[in-house]
Length: 447
Image (tube, rainbow, N blue to C red; front, side, top):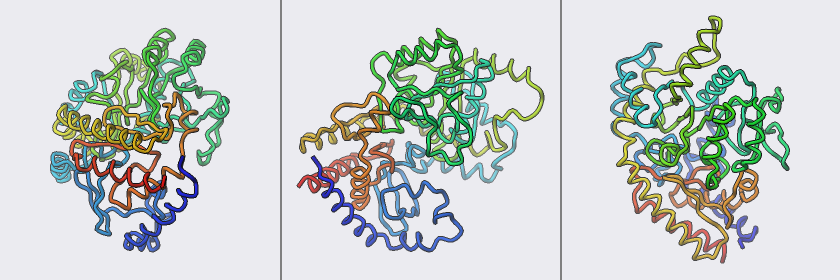
């Protein structure tokens, strides 16, 4: 219903408006010295704008640029600041820790408290701390292969579990291929990584009953290729088949912690053998955790006792540093609370209702998918059931144009597809304004 010419015309106009409104950010982009392509990390160029907005500060659910523009932030650091930018308890705790040392390679009393807090929130008794969720997923894959003595892992097509080589396998026309976007790909991953479609119970059963899969690494619902919800009974069958075949079930809840207190698996089930959480758990301070059952812990301890002394390939010098421990202690103790989730879920429901209203007003064959505080606007009437279907309904030109239109009106979405997050400090007025500006964009595109 939206013509390509309309999208292109809006994009050209919005680019000109963005350039005019952000002279300092433009100057920064052309004068930054020492950075490859002008940014500290290359994905900072993935936004829809002709050059990145240069951030000056962020507080709560707003972000201010060096050009003085204040944005309602629904990206929230792509989940890292899902509980708000610099919540006061976190800022205070970090300031105190800065005067006491940042990394010791030793445990702390606060760390002992944090272990109990993690167990209480997520329902798993044993934990380890890493610097990123990517590092946690790499460690978990090693542990699973080590304790099962199986080489293969199983993932779902279209997944993303961070910078972990083992998961860079896609299905293209039903055939597994090494993901071509992986820079410096030298190893064929296909002998040790099995990729199937999400929600395909028959393919899952066939793969696991071969008896050579160490673990299934999955999100409870897919969030990195748009949003793909689990069909009724799929996760329950996933849990059952893992139990039947001695396969370890690993749930990466780095994004789906947005579902509710304790994450998606605690809110809706099933419980995993190993759980990974990163980004938001430290409020943006680089850290992640993985938790596991007592049975998995026994098998890990036995493996540790049986191996030769030396490097395990798991962990870095900064793993479980004092700053990360302090950040998580403050977040779990004072910020990531049931009351915080109550506000987030209420604001998410408000946003979903308004987005559905906008879709209805324009009679678009679109839908809104959401779980907890995470909302996705999908340019399709039928919710995708797997990664291939989700990839097929994406419209990068339309999505990036809408993102740029909203940014020019002080609203930030995540740069990847149409994902929105609400935080414990997101206000009703911000939600209402997002829906109103989206309505204006669509009115212009459909005129």
